[in-house]
Image (cartoon, helix red, strand yellow):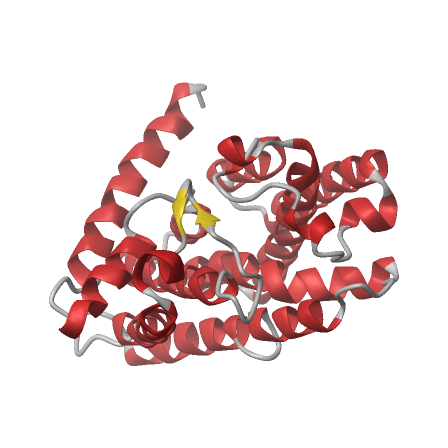
Amino acid sequence: MTVKEPESWVRETLASVERALERFVPADAPAGLGEAMRYAVLEGGKRLRPLLVMAACEAVHGDCEAALRSAVAVELIHAYSLVHDDMPCMDNDMLRRGKPTVHVQFGEAQAMLAGDAMQALAFEVLTPDEGVDPALQACLVRLLARAAGHKGMAGGQAIDLASVGKPLSEAVLRDMHRRKTGALLQCSVLMGAACGRPAEPVWQALSDFGAAIGLAFQVMDDILDCTQESAVLGKTAGKDEDANKPTYVSVLGLDAARTYAMDLHAQALAALQRSGLPGERLGWLAGLVVDRQS
């Protein structure tokens, strides 16, 4: 594989995802709701989760239509979580993706509704009347619901809010971030894999891959939060330290956190090799997770 090939694949895949998001996210939802939803999800973002869905589907030769719908759905869940997390009752952030957060732009009530609507829309996208096997639809819905709910993202956020100003062990911090950030990234890999229904050993290897890069992503987030400027991050730098939140940098130290991120990257690649799949795309995306600057 040449250096340009994965970048070309990313461009083509992102173009497909953006077209699908444009198609599914309504502009005509009442009373300005559609505008707030589209502001939250269409303008900016790395789209790492959709890329993981599509790369995993490609690796297992899965159903491309189901994968594209999964890519849209997981990005909608991610976008809704950011809208809600940024609100004053949560993290009270003013900046996201280099622009005012949704509650700053549209008001708190509209931001709450936009997040609610995107969450509901994600599951509507996953359950079309035709074109995707109903059994696969049920599998995808279950994966996403579990990753977004109390066992995943919402549960991790609850732990995060309850941990402000409190010392945490590395084990508790790891559990929090596996839920809050890691679960949705792991789910992205598994939703793509489900579109091809691989054998159990392959599924487990991809699950381990997703878990490792999910945690690595959060470790890198913690590192970047204290080493980059807001203009580079597109969000307020140093927010976790100012809020006295436990992070991998505060618990392990900066150098040890960097080492841990590299160890997780190595674990991800080992799991991918264990799967026996042609996982060049997934391996390349794993590299992006630990090499990113924002």
